[in-house]
Length: 352
Image: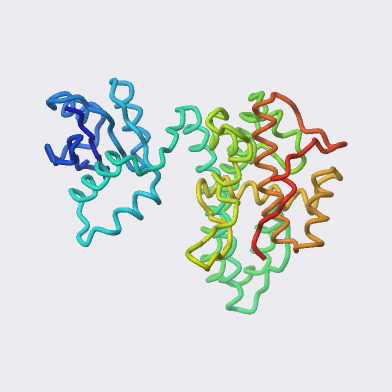
């Protein structure tokens, strides 16, 4: 008898539901969220395990890797689709979620998600740490500006290197303001030092990787964007065509069609949000500060016809497609002449 196993993973416990090939519940249980514990529990089942389904999440990739190494056929399921299906249940519990995941697996009504390699997850961890430190440093700077603004002291536009001196000048002579700003300035200085160290390490990672070096031949693509793209895609062979990268990262318009109604909305915003933001930032840099290339000219012409916002999104999608093609072909970006493009890349069905 073929069995389909649904796992609803939480930090401490994992709810398990096993259903047969006829859709009947065979067994339900709850175990620790550890790969070896789950593997031992699954080994005791009577029957052949056809597939094990996990909703993609923070612990899912670690558990998926552990179960796969043990010899089980585990699959990660797209979070948005699973949540949409489980909303139909009037009562939500971990036990019912595990049953819902098992039934989705049995019916085949799910979209599999690639389990990223360990190296890709490590790169994403470094990029995540860099972003967290950067955001906290910016939050401290904004808090300092707001603190002094209450007393009519305006920091104004100033470079990051002169920010600390400017704050001390404004707080000078007021012991209470000195006591309030000094700890924050010390914390900012520490964060700035750590951020510089991570920036150096990120540039080193990108420089040592041959794929990232080729990706960075495109104007507007720096070390952070290149590493973000490489870690998010992980395996370029997962896409049968480069044009599939745009929808995967959520840079294509959504559509709601029913009967006579057919509405095209904003972009779907599916996939990796960090990659989508990185591509949009790269497109903005290319349009505003990049050197003159055929791709920048294409973006400028589109901006004149459809507006800068639509042009930025279209350019970000096109950058993603070209980066994937560079990766697959082992080539570099050619800034002097545009390659021959299929019809789908010359159309821009983006919403106004």
